[in-house]
Amino acid sequence: MNHTVNLAIQMLPLRLPKEETYRIVDVAIAEINKSGLKYVVCPFETVVEGPYNEVMQLLENIQNACTEAGADEFIINMKLHRAAAEDMKIDDKIGKYKE
Image (cartoon, rainbow, N blue to C red):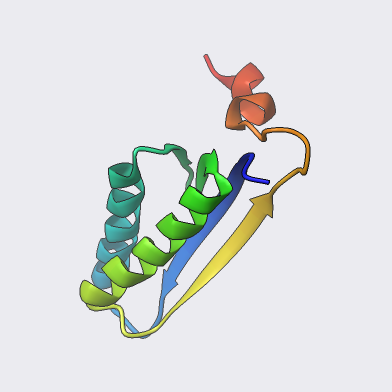
């Protein structure tokens, strides 16, 4: 079962000044961009679309990249939308709101 899933990712670096917090969030978003998966950056989270295995690997890559960038401690809030028999698409959820 490796259908397309949606994963909302919120990176919350802990015990860092505001500027460093934003820099670490930017590192996470850069890692998402590097993955080649479809994504949408929102004010509080970034939503990624892709095959389950690739999305889970991306999650590991984000953690490694943020740790290497200086985030010694962080919380990642996640929301996963997955179905056994069909693909989950970002556009199915927000396509009608795009201009």
